[in-house]
Length: 280
Image (cartoon, rainbow, N blue to C red):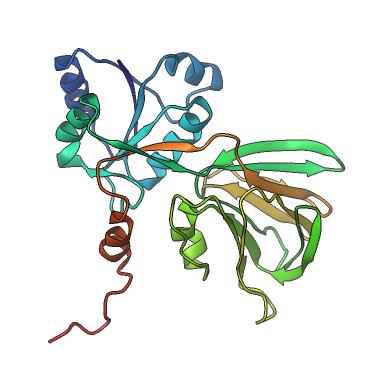
């Protein structure tokens, strides 16, 4: 058994050491993968890994998801952050959770990953994958973007907006939700397009069936593209195309809670369905 650990910036060294000690007591090999590690280092450390354990918040979990999904390695998220919507257990539950995983007392929940390609005149400039979303928004002096949207080769329309978000079901409760998008059950394979502050009131989010490829062509720009809110973005010029689809492999998430706990999480973490004025 081999476990790879990824930690967030707020996790202290003594907390990492305690995880390694817990693994050692169970005769489990453990390595730490830095979030900024180079591709060849990632490949080497993840060889024969049975689990990626993320210590941190949702950002750390997203980082783990991006390296885990292509390699079919399950991810267990331990929340050391504030919200922890994606993570499964809290920091003080780590030891018990690790024990349950090693004992096989868990289930696997699969999540759709996003595959994004930025191209210019048929030439690929960048490719990325993400669990939550890709955001295409205005940059520089551009005050409003004009985007032409195609789905499966079919022209949907042209919108004027601050930008657009293409999100997975997992990402529907993140930036897409803050921008007015719908909430999707996390195991769904659908993708959702959410316009950001559209100029026309009739422009609303659209949910697309699984297997559809969504293309955003920049008619008026310039623009910028970010996947999963990563700090580094890609500059997009007029005429560039951002193509979004489902990644060939789905993310495997370790869960101890039952599937219906998603709705409990919505209420506890996001306050969905809670009355603004408490009942007397």
